[in-house]
Image (tube, rainbow, N blue to C red; front, side, top):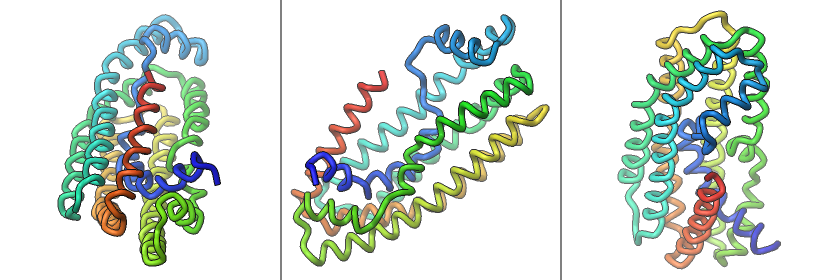
Length: 266
């Protein structure tokens, strides 16, 4: 197993925790391109008229700040989880509080996002909304949670054992933790899929109500919130069974990966 593949496997449990806990945060990432470039591409794809193009620019300019805040929340959560990983000891209540605080920040943005969805829906014809659904569907296939579907406990544990030199007890405890985290991530992934299908259904309706969209998002937000203590416990257990040196190896690799991704998204 190459060093690159080994570390990719090794970081899987942490990615399950962070990705699962922030799946809604990552649902709408800000586009680094200018509004005019995005509107131009969208106009070409959907054959927007001049009035629609102007409305598209207005909607995008108003939603961009909200998406930037969500991106910042996710980045802060990543950094704080890494800081927790590098501590000598962690408390499950503290980790739970950290996750719930970030999730509450996401909740505060739901009304604005619901309104932007409603504005976007109003400006499109039924034919254009069908095209949007097709494009969104293709994009969602590459989501992190989709890739987690192929995760295999024995492969993950083998990779971590090879990279971190886990002893037999650590391997067994790691197996138990990963099985729990994978089970939780599957449940969250199902909520994500349900939200996707509900958004599809709303997109195809002749009209939508902002409050109804907000309620839909709120229900899914609450369902994921209920899983945060389980994710916090998994993270705490993972921290407990690893040595300081092993935790530092994981943290360093994740920092490099996320920093590389940050530059790549500019």
